[in-house]
Structure formats: C-alpha cells, structure tokens
Image (cartoon, rainbow, N blue to C red; front, side, top):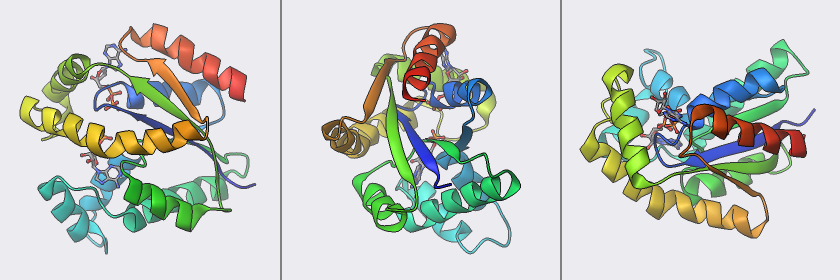
Length: 196
Ligand code: ADP
Ligand code: AMP
C-alpha cells in the first residue's frame, strides 16, 4: 500500500503533538513528529546528518528537505515493514516551508498520497503561553519567550505560504485549537471520521 499522509501544521505550542498522539489511539494512523525525528537524529553519534542538523538548529534555520524527508521516509518504511496495515501517517510539523514542500513533491510524488492538512489555529498569545508552560518540563531550549516569538514570525513567514498552497487545492481542514484538549479532540475526531 502507498503511504497515506496527513500533515499537521500550526503555530508552535498549538497542540499538534498532543492531538496527533491522541488520534493514533482513535484510528489507524502512526504519528511522526518531524521535530522529534530531527532532535533525535541530531544527537545520534554515528549519524551522517547530525552536524548539518545541529548547524541548522543553532542558526534557527530549517533543515534541508532532503534530510528531513529521508528521516520521515525511513520511519514510514520501518513502520510498514513491521506491519503492512500501518500505511497511514500523521506527520506533525512538516512541511515547514515551501523549500521542504518542493522537495517532498519531488521525492514523494507518486510514492505517497497527501490526504489533507490538519491546521491547528490559535493566537500568538495562546502559542506563547502553551510553549512557556511546556518549557517548564520539556527541556527544550526553544521553549522560552524570545525564541517562541521568533518561531511564530518564522511560522507566519515560511509555513503560511505552504498552507496557502494546500488551501488552493481544497486540502486544509482548520480547527480552532485555542479551546480545551477535549474540545479540540472532538473536532479532530470528526475530521478523521469524515475523511476516513
Ligand atoms: P505543538 O506540538 O503544537 O508544539 P504540544 O502538543 O506540544 O504543541 O502542546 C504544547 C503545550 O500545550 C503542552 O504543554 C501541552 O500539554 C499543552 N496543550 C496542548 N493542547 C492544549 C489545549 N487544548 N489546552 C491547553 N494546553 C494544551
Ligand atoms: P516542533 O515542531 O515544535 O517539535 O519543533 C520543530 C523544530 O524543528 C523547530 O525548531 C523547527 O524550526 C525545527 N526544524 C528544522 N528543520 C525542520 C524541518 N525541515 N521540518 C520541521 N521542523 C524543522
């Protein structure tokens, strides 16, 4: 089976990870977080990509699509190798910009179907307060006010054009992410129930 992919996008701290983990319990999707895969690869001693990932993270730049897509592809292949029925993937935090999208289209066109985009919508205030709350225990050096504000600007400048492109294709399913976890989850569930 060709991988069936849903991308989850939204401001940092919108709740993408929280909702993506929950939805995997409700339907047969495997959650892959682009950020988590990159952070893990960054610290892997024998990785051919760790140095480049480290440089990009330190400069606050996106890791080139080729690297992120290689990691996503490996994770998808591994999952499907272990269980051929697991061909549905919920990819969180990707594509972060049009370069990564272009690369995905180039490499994955015909290899995977992008079903739709789950867009977790919230204000800058919600994004900042949730990241600061997460920062108390996440150990992430980017969960502080200054970095979150910068990440929101990057999201607006770089990720919104990706969303606009998918919007033109009628593929964006927007959800008001500013409500409680359960309220947001009810909407997420309805989208998956509708789309299959
Ligand atoms: P993202 O993956 O979009 O960066 P997370 O899922 O990691 O966001 O959520 C960021 C923080 O906000 C976490 O501490 C999480 O527990 C909390 N959170 C997630 N969804 C909600 C919600 N609907 N209401 C309040 N807090 C939330
Ligand atoms: P998060 O989605 O919040 O878990 O974190 C993703 C982190 O990875 C952010 O700091 C992103 O800027 C960074 N990142 C770097 N390159 C990429 C990429 N190609 N795709 C997704 N996230 C990336």
